[in-house]
Image (cartoon, rainbow, N blue to C red; front, top):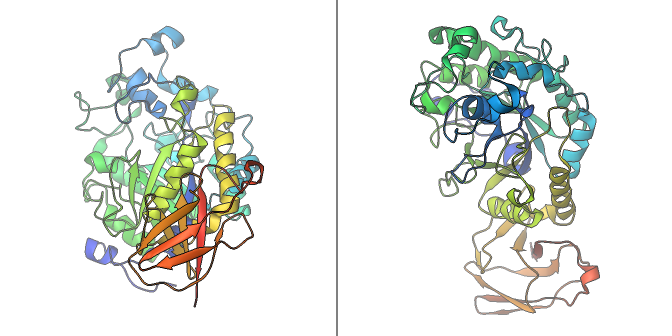
Length: 453
């Protein structure tokens, strides 16, 4: 238990040691689900982040970035507001237990749900007065989606986290769009509040409400890094309260997107998405998030070619873990609560691979005492794991920069011990001949080098 008293300044807050569970977890599931899942569409773009369907309010209904299609007016009509989608966000096929089991079988150790995205719609029955008729129990499924999934995820033995947008498009201005706002003025006037009142009346009360009611193991903040100053957002004061007084204070971890001063500088862990930032050489805990396709929210404009293959995703997972990071892989459910089958298939393939090779991933740290063309090495409990992106050649040669004493070597998924020899600083491993039907897994293969204690 951490009895240290954290002060609301960065020197004090940065002195906190991140709870170990996060670095050991390595693989989590992100879920982008909300009102935007009803239209579930955005024109595809090669621009980074250009295909995000969860940005429908700003980029299809509104005119931010790759706007330029009449999709909204053509399909839904001139007078159809974004908020009108909420009544169709029905979630009637949502099965929290099925979701949780699917994520568990994929090998995930934690799950993060969008409790509130930038559109401001809340997936829990918030008591905030400004969210009347814009929360899940007033309009939409009429059920606490966050609560149900939290219970199901914890029952499966995984950690549960929440994504929370630090800003609301209907209230907060930004330097990013030319107009200064992401959504049309008519919506802001009708639904927004005085921006100066936002931190005291929405932001901080909702963050504390989520923490107190659901005690998440992780808070993924987002949007605050664009424009909100640390003083306006009251970030340091909130984190001081979280680390000192919150019921989950000994377990919770937070990322670096609460305010403009944080990215890559402050937070229990640093976050990136679709490799927009490389945190692997900063000596700080980090996490990469991405969708299975090019969008976080389900995007009906995407087809098979827009989705990563299972092989690509497994290679990305092993690359991230071997560089010391976590992968937070996103699924985008449909408005009625289904996880698209292609996304289920990708999760199943990852889970099948982890059943064989999970010991090379979970609770490991990068290993820097060996070199090979793959450059993917992890270590744990006097074992070194060499992760290969393809079936190894008849003999694989590794260059050692540290002296090691070997007890045995095997290929994970096969019981037999492998022949090897040491020549100066070279380790030469002889690969077994295996019939294709006897391969232990697909996509990546792992040599386990057990060291003599």
